[in-house]
Image (cartoon, rainbow, N blue to C red):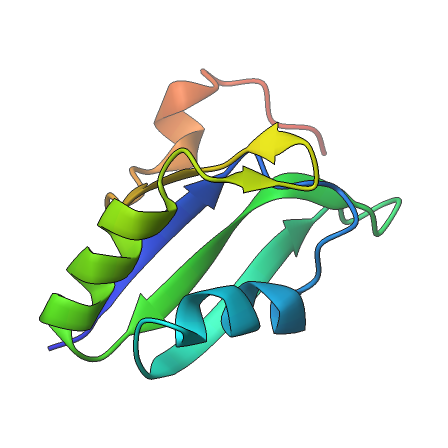
Amino acid sequence: MSKKLFVGSLPYSVNGNELEDLFAQYGKVDSAIVISDRVTGRSKGFGFVEMSDNNEANAAMQALNGRDMNGRQIVVSEAKERSDRGEDRGDRRRW
C-alpha cells in the first residue's frame, strides 16, 4: 500500500517535477503534485507526494522535514484524510 505525504512551506516557484526529483532521491515516487490556486494558477505553497514503499516514504519524510529549499524550511508529514469541507465552512455556499 502506498503512503501519501503532505509537503508544506514550499517555495512558490517549485513545480511538480522538482518536487518529484527531490523525493526520488529516497525511492520511487508514484505521484508528486503542487497545489495551485484555481483562479490565478499560482502555487499555494504546498503539495502531495505518493510513494509505494512505506520505508522509502518514511526515509524521505525524516530526511526532508525541516530541510531548506530556496530559503524556505519545508514541512513533510504523513497526509491526513480530508474531511468534508462543507462542514468546516458552515453553510456559506454561493449559488
